[in-house]
Length: 194
Image 1 (cartoon, rainbow, N blue to C red):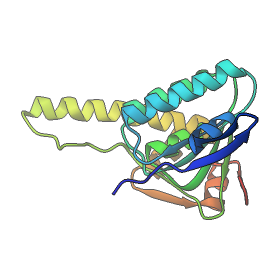
Image 2: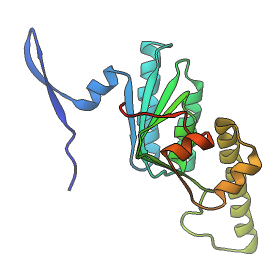
Image 3: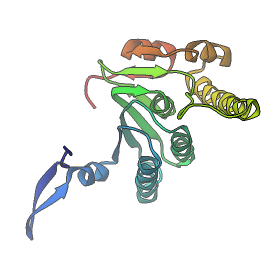
Image 4: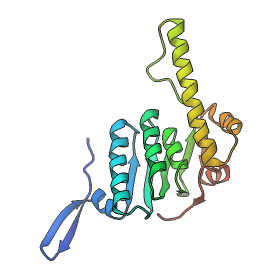
């Protein structure tokens, strides 16, 4: 079963018309990162963020996040776009920001989390299994260690923690409730409303 996108009805001098609620949110400079982070989602968000920057290069954009993470390369591409914009990107955790989504959440210029929000950080995972010769397995391991360093460096910069502290927290799934996320430096404050 697929979810239908909610529509809203607007009245203008020309009469009534329906529009997608996402279009209305975009007009308020709000975009959503919901579900698995894939190349398609990252591309869609990149287009929206860049369009909003073109509309007003200094006004804040709000990125609403509720995601368990996803593809690291796609997430890092989105991270690079967020950091390269001339306008600040406020991130808001609605529900869960885990794995790659936690990195994106922490990268916000202003990072806010709802009272029941949760953030989870961990080391990158091997997807699809590792097999083949010893040299092939070693190559996979080397790439994974490089990605680990990249992600932990980003988290260290965003939280103000040392790389060693981040490595200690990411060696296993580490969950933070809203207050713990603020205390650790993953979020700036807990908010009651968006």
